[in-house]
Image 1 (cartoon, one colour):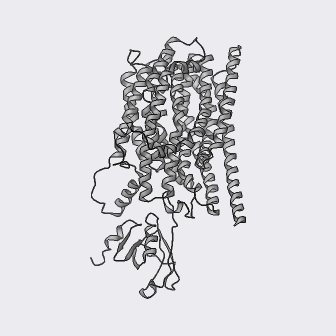
Image 2 (cartoon, helix red, strand yellow; image 1 turned 135 degrees about the horizontal axis):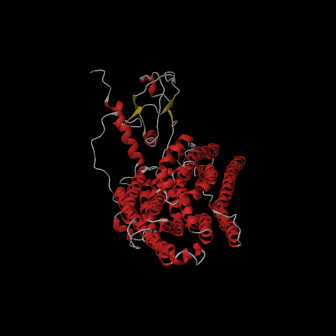
Image 3 (cartoon, helix red, strand yellow; image 1 turned 90 degrees about the vertical axis):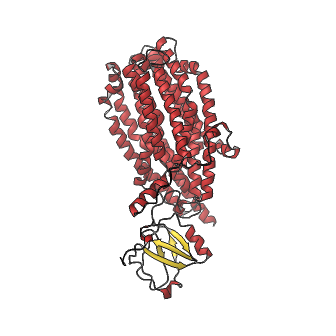
Length: 603
């Protein structure tokens, strides 16, 4: 019993406390101490050693600043006679989050995330952006199996109008992720956290108003938007009517979609991936149950495409309610954990969760209040570049849907809807690398210029490319099993055969998708918005030009054009922009290095 270790032996490795003018530091595995004393050596092992050192105010402030740093110690003996004369140098040496002091502004020590850390962040982040594509895929499967090919064909232009219009407010999500990550990465103190919570509240309020405006525009212009995509008046009346009903019902859910997207973006910026996954799971379950109950209904306003749309809208508002409750309420206090493993698990969960983050800062009725003007103005620099980027992305998808709907017939429309739903369901896996880059890169990019910062940016780009190759390999494996899953998407054998003809092209696209999204995320993290905006502005005109050439060939009587031809054009577009993004990343790294050399010469 006399040899029982003291209570603080099982405490957190980073525990610091002040007692009677002393700093009690539990040096355990995470801090390096070097001194001038002969008795201070580096080959010893004092894991769990407690040192009580007299400190002055300056040293106390230094230790306070290291509360979030991980620390390790190596010493063999430290006598009382030499303690006062020892010159201590504390330096963080372990792996750190972007919230830690090693990646703060002016810290001088920035660290590039390795491949394992990137994938560890990106894989759970897949679910963050899987919500909307998963709901659309559930709709596609339910309608194809329960309502027939005509109703499934109606989803092709309807989902195109709904989802691509929703991308126009993506600037909200990009800005929220970058601003939250930059704010917390720059300073992890309590004041910074309070400022982040206020910005989060303003982002939620702004997203509600933006979603209402977008929903009103979509509801009012649903018919002309559908006609512009379909491109002719010979479309089946049943298909057009079902598509119009679907778009107008989905327009009612745009406010909820905007709030969900902004909440997810903020969670990603704060490295919380658990909360969005809970919301996704709840939304998917509610949507699936709604499809099961409504799609089989014979009423044109409650069944078929309309039933799928109602189920999606219900699931979106339910997800908003759950998300707001999660952010506003914390769990009841529980007894503190008694064992070291319990404390480690509890500390990890608390550090990564945003549950209760807006407690006392946000109420449900605050959605009706205008956002803070200063916080709202922070979104302005992202509007034009990100929106032009989304226009460039949307143009290719809209052109594909237009060519297929206007010239290739109902069966090809249904097959394209299956393929595009699979594309958007797998795309978030690669897009998670972009989100990871937007969480890691801003803290490194905004550090003070130094050789360490330049090396960290270069290594970060290389590590994200390696992670992109790993992600692409996994996605290609998923695409390779699509030919065996045709029966899950439709009961029409002609539709299944058309889907299988496009699978080889999908393998080529997904083999480069990880490199593309990781490069784009690094560019966004370095705020290279001008280049991205100009590039997508060019793509906005070039890609539809090549797509419309296929339509002209079909109308001229050429029988060589089919669904595979449309996706071949998209494959070329994907390969070109991937190469362009990678070259741009290399150019930025060389520019950063050149600027550093110029600064050194001037100094």
